[in-house]
Amino acid sequence: MKLEIKHSKKTGTIKQAFNRTFPFLKIEFFNLKHLPGEATAINNMIQDDVSLETINPSMKEGWLSIEPEDKVSAVEQIFQHNFGLPVQVFRKQKNVWIETTHTDHLSLAEQNEKGKIASAPAIHREPGDRYLDEGEYQ
Image (cartoon, rainbow, N blue to C red; front, side):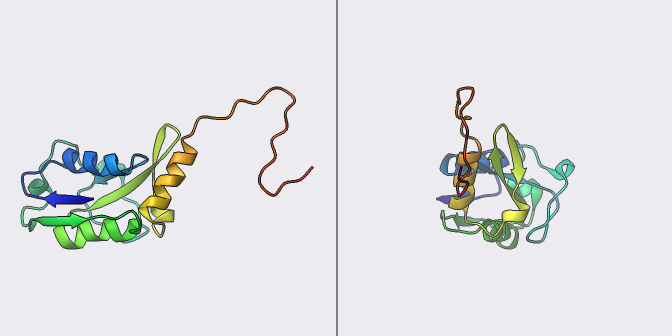
């Protein structure tokens, strides 16, 4: 996926493009930068209708190439270092989005797969059926 980072682009446009490629992940823009593995307070999150130049008026424009095998921490740091845009990646867990701070070492593909599995509908079991976890034996 290639994203064009321009002053006039809105945060929501970037977020939608990212989520189309990784449907169980999303990025959120913040007004504070963070170190790898750190969370950012939700009250520092930026709305979808904000232009990128509002976040960083001295931002340089360019293209950002994101691949499924890229680590979450690397993607977050590229946004920050190359464009001065603080972002966090979130993963879908059922009906909520969780910040991936403890799993930033995983690739986007791995995170997306974890979100897909975690958001899958529960398997219907008949009363009396016994569910065995992997590695558990009767």
